[in-house]
Image (cartoon, rainbow, N blue to C red):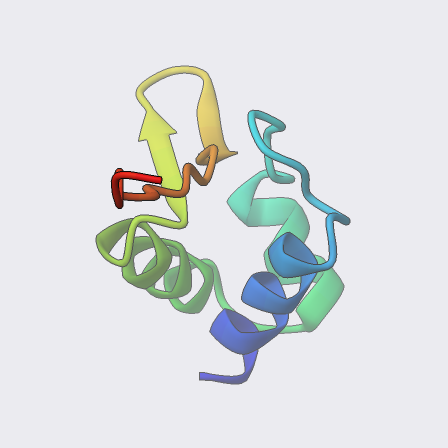
Length: 74
């Protein structure tokens, strides 16, 4: 949970920008002193919520956030 919140904070603050790759799972595991499995779970949770996307063979990337503003007729 702590790792997921920290990664989300970094995305929200622009440390990891839209379209940018995140460090590898091994690098994140070393940085946060957790297992690779813990990193993969955190990344999977953020993919499920639409914050990240994973591309096989390339890595995990921050999704571009698009806002939808309905036409209110103004």
